[in-house]
Each structure stands twice: as structure tokens, then as C-alpha cells.
Length: 92
Image (cartoon, rainbow, N blue to C red; front, side, top):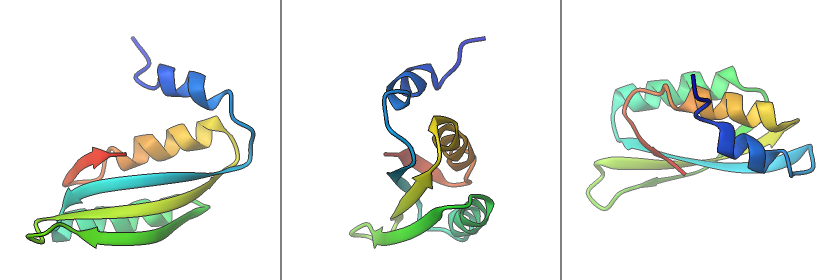
């Protein structure tokens, strides 16, 4: 089975740790997305919400996080966890 994170693993291996990783999620402005974000935030040590912005029509929400990563695998774990949030539209 192919590793969906192979390319980012390769890029992250070139970084110096620990580091501050900026992570942005965009999803539906819904109770399900907000509940998923709360669960996501409590599941990771070193994750801090630093900004929230609603779309022009309030249909979508963009949430920015700072993540203090100890190594590349911590970032991969964060990406995997965020991909499971209900209502998620995009990870930047």
C-alpha cells in the first residue's frame, strides 16, 4: 500500500526540530465541524488555535493553528487527525 504522506515525510525530514508548524483547516460552518475541531484540539499536545475567520456568507470557517512539533511524525499524526474532522473541506 502506498503511503499518502510519503512526499511530505520526505520534505519534513529536512527540517530542524522542534519547530512551529502553521496548520489551516477550512470546513463547513456547522456544529459538526466545530465539535470535530474541539475533539481535534484536545487530542494533540502543543496545538494552539491562533485564528478563526468566517467566509463572506458565513457558510465556511477557516481555522489557523500553531503546532509545536517535536518531529516529522508528530506533524504526520496531526495531519491524519485533522483529515478525520467531520465537515472538513480543505487542509492548507
